[in-house]
Amino acid sequence: MPTLGVNIDHIATIRQARRTVEPDPVAAAVLAELAGADGITVHLREDRRHIQDRDVRILRQTVRSHLNLEMAATDEMLSIALDIKPDYVTLVPEKREEVTTEGGLDIVGQIARIGEIVDKLQNAGIPVSLFIDAESAQIEASVKVQAKFIELHTGQYAEAKDETTRQRELALLAQGCEKAIKAGLRVNAGHGLTYWNVYPVAALPGMEELNIGHTIISRAALVGIERAVREMKEAILGH
Ligand SMILES: CC(=O)[C@@H](O)[C@H](O)COP(=O)(O)O
Ligand SMILES: NCC(=O)COP(=O)(O)O
Image (cartoon, rainbow, N blue to C red; front, side, top):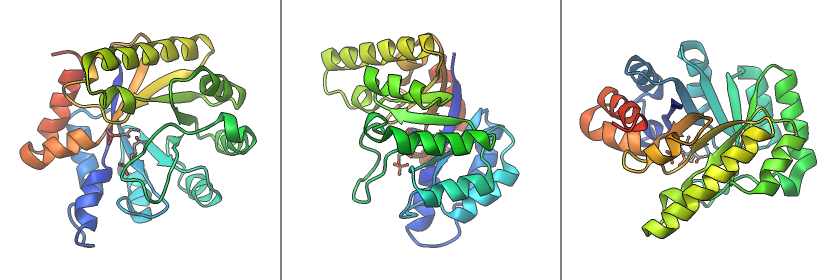
């Protein structure tokens, strides 16, 4: 079964609501790892709406599992990643006006640019994951740019309004996962996964890591992050 990458962005959302110093994402990461998180994910957005540069720099020193830096494919973020050297980078799309990520990164339409960034990061020893929709063309383009991983965007599956749509989206994820693995890519998944919908994605053959944040931090606000992480680990196992 896949490992769990805990995205702690929304610990920082609470802190930034008052532009203060608590809750500290660094402390949240320690507690998440003690509760069984296999990795810590943070999204350093261009608008710094939640995670700050300071958080990423300290997390690099304190995370004991592995640190996944989500970032836009920009020169600014490339420079930061090459300086901080996370365990891996996930290239994600960003729009200033979005509430949260709205879809997968378009590799096909910017293959030279993405290839250049993937090369620079991987030549520096930083494996790259590409956050994409489960579309054949995007998977094929991910192979072309020689990314080590893809992360399948699970948003349409998570936001499905009825069971028929949910099953259709799950089938697309399953086909994408199988195609990617056959092409030599390693496969992660994330976005919008919850305690109630995670297991069918976790059970996809070859799925390596699930990056999950909002639902865990939402539960953590009520029962604490250790229990929220432990319960997500159990949900991934189908318990
Ligand atoms: C790429 C993705 O789905 C999330 O990891 C991303 O971090 C969402 O952005 P927010 O955390 O700002 O909601
Ligand atoms: N890449 C997905 C992620 O890190 C967390 O997304 P979400 O669970 O906060 O929707």
